[in-house]
View 1: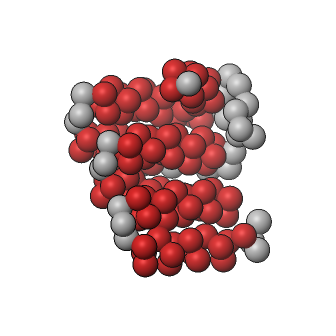
View 2: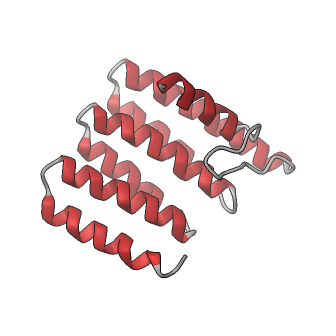
Amino acid sequence: MRTLIRFSVFLLVFGLAPVWGFSAAASDPAENAKLAAAATHYEIAQLKLESGEYDAVLAEIQEIVDLDFSGENEGVLTFSVLNLTEELLNADQHGLARQAVDATLKVVDQQENRFMLLMFKAKVFRDDGKIDEALETYRSAQKLVNQF
């Protein structure tokens, strides 16, 4: 299953396949270059995860975030970060997972993407035993529902 998800993300980032309702814009050369850069950072982050170099994973996530995606590709950014932060969470790297989500929240504009990021951040708080922070974050996500 993990390989299927990684392959789907690879296709998604390169704009070759719509996955879970997202598709990457592939007609603009500048966007294509950003998508290609994101794909390399994503794969490097995966390797760093496998080798336990978690701070390096956060640095690669920041590189993806700094590519400044917008429009449809903001979904690519969100999906990629959520996949990587899920891996950080699975490695008990709660603080790094929250930092990655927070960095991404600073650049996404679409309410659906903000909602997904906030829901995941609440999950990280919950998993880390920080129930009050989880509740507060779930409430923030709940407020966005009316803006869809």
